[in-house]
Image (tube, rainbow, N blue to C red):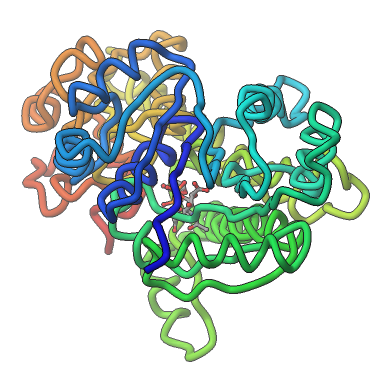
Length: 403
Ligand code: SAJ
């Protein structure tokens, strides 16, 4: 029987850690590498530093079994996976320095026949750039190592399940690399593995998120038009979606998280003339959040004029999307901050937060009692079917109270 390949995972964050743990659970020997000593220490104790359902138990098991070990330096392995951040600077230019550092850490221990796979969202051409970088440091390895790009496409909150079951697009710098990478993913993915080339796979990842951004922008634009003409946007979309070929997404407070609001820039920055629609979608979604802030401020002002006192406003939900506690790039959090900056008396509610993650948040039932204006910013499950006294003003920007 063929021996299972040894694996090094560079980056133990939201994608790297679950992927490393899943691979280790299939009996492959995985060395997880992270620049943070603290993260390494936490993982080696069988614990985790991020919030993701089912992850802690999985990490605990594979660490105990000895198939996952965390460290700050890579060792020689058959397969190197790179899942490090590719953040943006202010000017929206992707920052490949973490990928570069990962490659520089790997090259001294690389051996002939190794396979390097990049999973981080990256500009088109990054895998070829990685290849050049490796050969610059180790010219003798030219044509003797394999490189491929295979984007993750898992949904935060459902990562473990989707890592196993999602189909994947896998693109090598040559057909041999693609074939090697596909063989590797077969160890832990049950979804279909589609062969392509590196550039296509890189673009697929960005386009998936850009496409969702575009579709949400359409829904958000509809919500602004509906508000002006006096139509209930939620009812209207529900009815339009009864058409067999129409599937409009849901409008909201804006687009948050670290993927959809960011990834379109990976294309826009290098192709500004050709990506006008993507830019417009991005701008539309950003504008939606500002529009929500203005609507709430206007309502508060109207209340003050009517009642000769400032209202108390409840911000219901701070996370970037329903039923999670993640507040990164959250439009709801942005709205709350803007309202506070405008000296509005604000009660913050985020039922998914563990104690201590944000000071001053209160229970949603208390907020409903105390507030004059109740603003729904995130459609958390617990906000459905709440009993809200008739005299309260309700502003719903996420459809949780629906029709
Ligand atoms: N949103 C809306 N209306 C909708 C759907 C979403 O306003 O109808 C908002 C959400 O509230 C949130 C934002 O969009 O603020 C993004 O949420 P999401 O659930 O659409 O996506 P993410 O950011 O959690 O994960 C996305 C996923 N990509 C796609 O669905 C195309 C996921 O599969 C990717 O793996 C992930 O980005 C990533 O890492 O790139």
